Length: 444
Image (cartoon, rainbow, N blue to C red; front, side, top):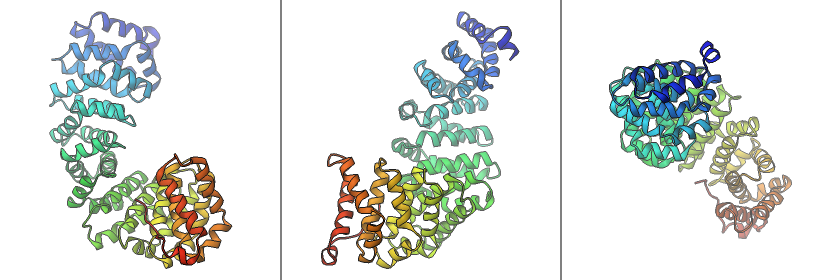
């Protein structure tokens, strides 16, 4: 703070710009900025004073100076937590500078973990930067750093975090991480340092993000015993909600693969149920738990086992308890649709827990959420297949709500939503003889 008051960030940045070729100036300047950047209040001052551009220039000029580059990577790690500054870093060539530093100094653990932290922040929820990092072989560099510094906890924790941020909602990156051995790296990391909470949390989060909608990763995770590992971590960290939520995501991926043994499948389902019962007020645990149950119930016969384990009640309770958490509601509707798809007796069991009422409330509150409404219509269509459920659905206003969706989204709207809505309306209106020719469906 004294430095900021007496001299100002702009003085330091100005000196770095004027004397970028002088090793002492650029190293000392980066050291000062790295110290200042630890404070969140100083980070916008550095960006406004063109400190980001100055730091990138230092990284380009100091190709053989690991000390200056290490400080520079640390600065970028600190200031990259803000979306506007992320764009500023990318525009200044910061991604290439970080990649270059990692390539040039693979044995410098401190530089590696700072550079990885910066890349992780830059990639978070930013598809364009995720792709840019991958194009510059950033995925391979993160994995190489983790393999090269297996005893450095900062490298392991930041590395797992970066794999998560690079794979999040990015199937291309998730597939590439899988093909480059990223699943093995994350699994081994958790096993080797299971006493380090930060590493475990980030490692599990990475596996969940890598495995989502990624059949190759799901199969590899099953082969490596990742389901058993998730159960062990849930037991070890029973009071840690972040561990529980990420384990639920891992389990969702594992059970989506083929060849999961029945005994393991049962143990995984019970582990998810235990997590949801332990943290009913935590929206992330509940959302990831519903996601896992959606995966369980999608498999043939999975809905019977889920019903026997009380899954329908847990899902309905989660939806009641977190009526604004869209991801939870989506996974919940999918799970309920799966449990009502194949058997009229299953529908009766699900209905007994108030499933129709909670889905009706969801449709009233979130009519603009297309994917959510599509799953809600699928659930309603399955229930309407049973004449005994029809009056309940009509009394709850399902016909009017579904008709409203078809009018709001129109024939040019989402095809899946329109098809499911029309099918639900048809099942609500058909005679019993006509309904026998229809079918119920699971979410996909």
